[in-house]
View 1 (cartoon, protein in one colour):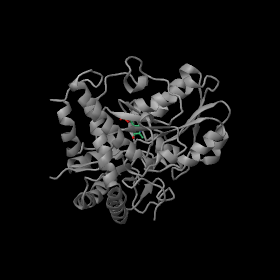
View 2: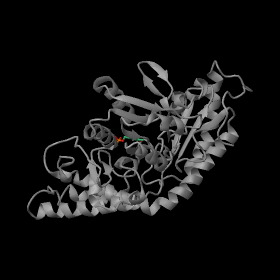
View 3: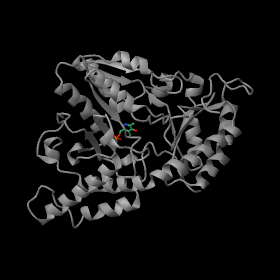
View 4: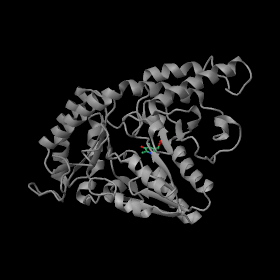
Length: 398
Ligand SMILES: *Cc1c(COP(=O)(O)O)cnc(C)c1O
């Protein structure tokens, strides 16, 4: 059985070219970039090259605008905490209900333990941000607005430039969690209003445990980690040289494959989506079909459990993910789908298929061959399922 990996929003395979670029930095070129000898300077110049590669992908002008971190989560946390510390008169955050836990859990902690006021901007049934509510939430006390570039579960893309402008009208900073967007959509930060942007290596075919925070020139950054002078004192820790160098090559490859991602990968995704909806009733796509990442499809199959679908697909060698997370024994559907008011009967059976440039037509064929049987089997066991049941939700995709 050929394994089919369609969970690329969870993590991606490290590209073999990335692996081979990294390998020397574990062996012969193991130096510490801060050292005053050849071992160090070799690594130093490799790090410099990697920075340039990442800058090209993001379209940034100045090399000191990129601060390497240990993950997307660290970048997100650094951005918000720094915004609060550098603007003592401002103690409010504006974010959304559909952010990644790297933002939401921190915001909840700040509310509880630091007395920070957080406004969670709602979304509509397609996952689109309520811009009016966002605008109203901004004010003279807003330290930072943080809205993701693209949602990891549905792929919905947010109008970050417009949102940054609105934040600036109130003198607030604007941060975007772009972990799912970097490498999938073109970016040109030098012409952008965005102040800070988070990204993560392992979502773009680089290894886990390396990320970056873009900090626009002139924006103050309060470091999360203090120690040595690495990253101009903005993130102390001996550089993760192999990781950073790997992420540089991954950025170069992402730029090279950008067109492929937007055309071939999107057409694989669309063929899977259309094929599943043709073959299976009482199913619909969640998210904004008009403004969506090219690689992501989230489909709700009504009256069954996502966990059941995943188990049966796993037996067929197919890996994807469900929106739901098992919280304290009760199965709660994903916070993203709940924020979109997708009914429980559908949100429970939501499955995310996320593609990458590694996927092929055969992958799509395999899912199309297996999925109708899986859904039929689970529905035959479901007490909620009656054939001919009308869908309880307005589909967003025809
Ligand atoms: C994966 C992800 C993160 C976290 O990145 P890590 O590097 O795994 O910490 C944050 N935000 C979004 C949108 C993600 O998809």
